[in-house]
Length: 61
Image (cartoon, rainbow, N blue to C red; front, top):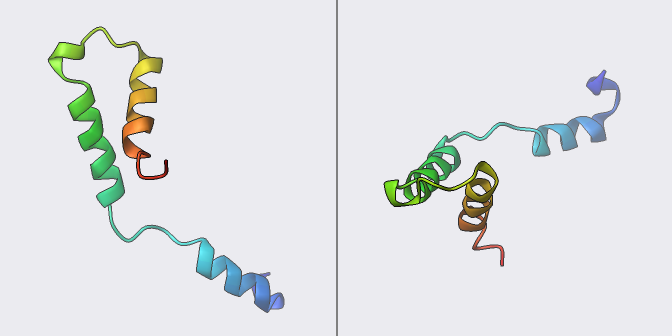
């Protein structure tokens, strides 16, 4: 079906591709390991998730 719509096909190929590296995922797990330290064992799931998002998106602010 994409062959019928060349512009859509080009956009699909340009923007709908998989990441070639697992580095972003590994970085996220690294953040999680730092935040989930034994001294923070009482964090709720919601608070933990918020801290991970803040840490991983600090460059956006």
